[in-house]
Length: 139
Image 1 (cartoon, rainbow, N blue to C red):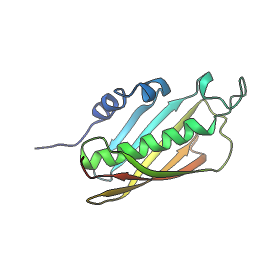
Image 2 (cartoon, rainbow, N blue to C red):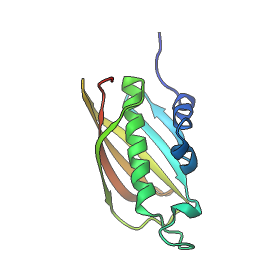
Image 3 (cartoon, rainbow, N blue to C red):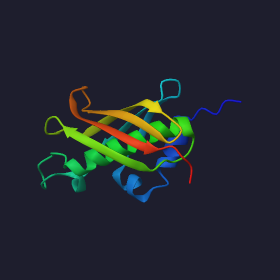
Image 4 (tube, helix red, strand yellow):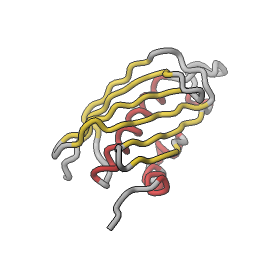
């Protein structure tokens, strides 16, 4: 029996969260073998650092990193997982209509999963990196 998750499966899970729905996070691809997800978030006025600047505020970037990292672990454990900790390193200001987050699982153990996330613009320029740890233990 194939229990691989699809883009549609992940999107349905994302859409259950009012915050993630508001943020407009879209799942672009899923790689169940390499435990990797790619997600996109489009700029909206509420995401700007200052009104009319076109620059992303750091909060939505960090939230995208956390969300993508979480769902990369979901590929392995098949259910939502709580965040233990994550960090974000902003490499340069983000002036782009959309962000692309690529989350790659580094390890999933009995209690903790670790994920690295790259955030780029639509040309592939690296804007931020993150690493998250997530609980893999049920209840």
